[in-house]
Image 1 (spheres, rainbow, N blue to C red):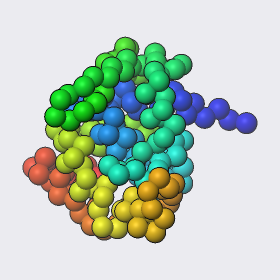
Image 2: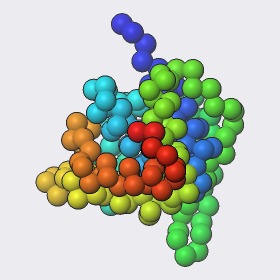
Image 3: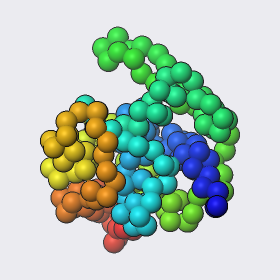
Image 4: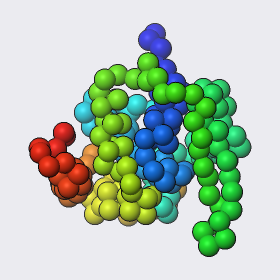
Length: 183
C-alpha cells in the first residue's frame, strides 16, 4: 500500500500559504486549502490534503483541522507553524500563524506546488472577505451544497468549479499579469 503523506502535505500547504500570502488567518487559510483540494481533485480525481470540508457560514471549512488549530496543532503541523489566538475588539477572536521551519514541499508533486503558487499569487493581498466572490460564487460547490443540504454539511469536491468562478480567477490573473495568465 503506497504511503500518502497527507499530513505532511497538509502541513506544507499550511506553511506555504501562511508565508506566501498576506492576512492568512484561519478563514483565509481554509478557503485556500479548499481551493487547492478542489482544483487538484478536478484535475486528478484526488485531493491534496485529504480534508473533509463542511458548509460553514463563512465558507468551506474542515472541522477536524479547525478543532486541531483551536486545541493546538500536533505532529507535523506543530512542527511547521505556531498558532496564536488573540482578541480584536471590533472583530472578536483572531488566529495568527508563525512559521517554525522553512517550506520544503518534498512530499508535494509539481502539480500540487504549481496550484499552490498560483493560488498564493491570485490571493496574495486578498482578505478572507474578499475571497467570497470565488468560494461563494453562484454555482460554487459551497453554495450548491449550502442550498441543497444546508449548513454544516459535507461539500463534495467533485462538484467542480463553474464557468463564473473560472472567469473570476482569470480576471484576477489578467489584472495581476500583463501577459497571458499562467492557468
